[in-house]
View 1 (tube, rainbow, N blue to C red):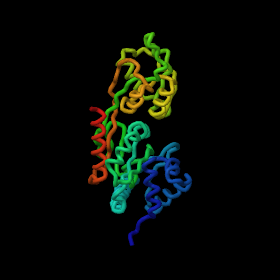
View 2 (cartoon, one colour; view 1 turned 30 degrees about the vertical axis):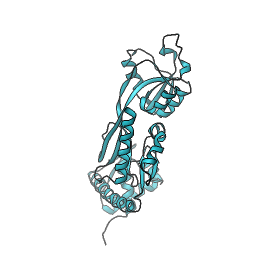
View 3 (tube, rainbow, N blue to C red; view 1 turned 180 degrees about the vertical axis):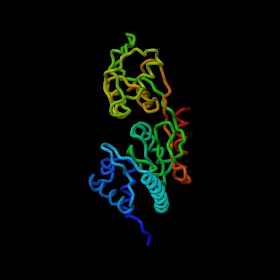
View 4 (cartoon, rainbow, N blue to C red; view 1 turned 135 degrees about the vertical axis):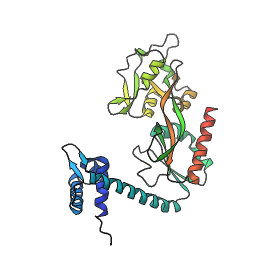
Length: 297
């Protein structure tokens, strides 16, 4: 019998090491903070070595704690890969994809019938949980991510880069008058709770309207909500042309000024670097590229 501490205690310590917080670890594990702290304390007593240094607002790993965390992460990763391989044998006809919410609604959903037709024998499962990670969850086969393409231990293939244009409902424009942006309500997308994306500023710079005051307006945590607000005539938004193509075609949205700016981030197809691409993922990638080529033709 191997003389190892309880697996549950080591799992708790791994989460504590990742979050550097008993409170955040407790939330993630659905335990009380005292239970998490007690598990770590018991583990330290078993090992006869301190693993964390307890500060008032955060935790710091000792050298022994850092070494144990690295070993546990590697071990759990290896176990996850093995479990995933076993599960895939019984799920050969299922493709689990995680995508950003706006991409799911604005780009993927209108093409879902095409995807079903292209992959008729594959059961497709789509999730939009922003916290769902290929590195931590065992069920996902692939994901579409928005960013710069740099994700550790993951392989990424670029799909498309955002093309930003300013849009609003046609009723807000008066063809008899020059466009005065200061008369509009600005619709913003939040990068975090207290910080907006800089898409408006980049667009205004390109339009040579950098002095325009965008301080007011409405804020949303999803681009999809800003697009919906623009469609309903609540203001003007800078949106990705790819996400609003149907609304532009139907006339629900119209472009404000002939200015288009390439975004600083892109959509990527992301898979695990260490795992051979499955036939289902390969088929999905082929369909994605075909749809993108058709849209840009």
